[in-house]
Length: 245
Image 1 (cartoon, rainbow, N blue to C red):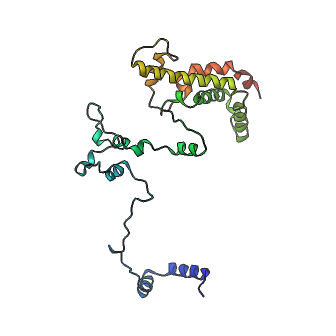
Image 2 (tube, rainbow, N blue to C red; image 1 turned 90 degrees about the vertical axis):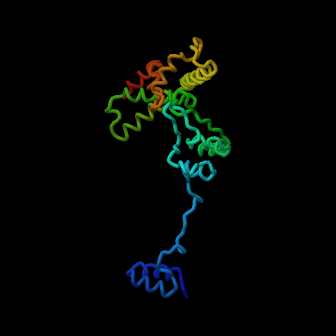
Image 3 (spheres, rainbow, N blue to C red; image 1 turned 120 degrees about the horizontal axis):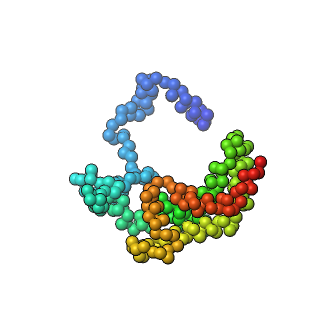
């Protein structure tokens, strides 16, 4: 009687055969040993990710005669978007793409929560001022001597001390959150008033202009709002921390 063990032994023995012997055995049981058009398997797209061009092509939006013209985002010599050759723009007009949520948003929704995605490259808007908290903690960490950071035990002990609620107080978090919301209010006001200078804006217009220069780089609050963050380092108890052995 054939058993699972017997089948495994048989498969192992087949692997040990030389190609001519294996081909002879295959012919003996009627297995085609040549790859022909009738035995080839044509891979499909099911279960696989496709690119922007393939997605647009499947919807009939791609001109076969001008395939090389298509780009993720295509611009002319004057910097104007060429919509008919910009794949992101074309697919962005589809309702299913417009309503598609990110994996993070989907998981949050399944847990009964809502994820609000802030714009890329704008750390000043992230979360409830989380980037300010992160910048504040990094500022404290950088001021400790290297000796306190060497070795796993020292490093973990220092992090535990820095990340304690003695440093990240509720009052401090609220101040950072207020700063992030001030930026949000200013951006909204700028959008409503276009390019007009707004003297009463929560964040000065010149500060926004300063941010434009470094917009497309990875920025943290400690980079673009250094004076604001560092004002809390001495104010909210950094000196006592430094003196602790």
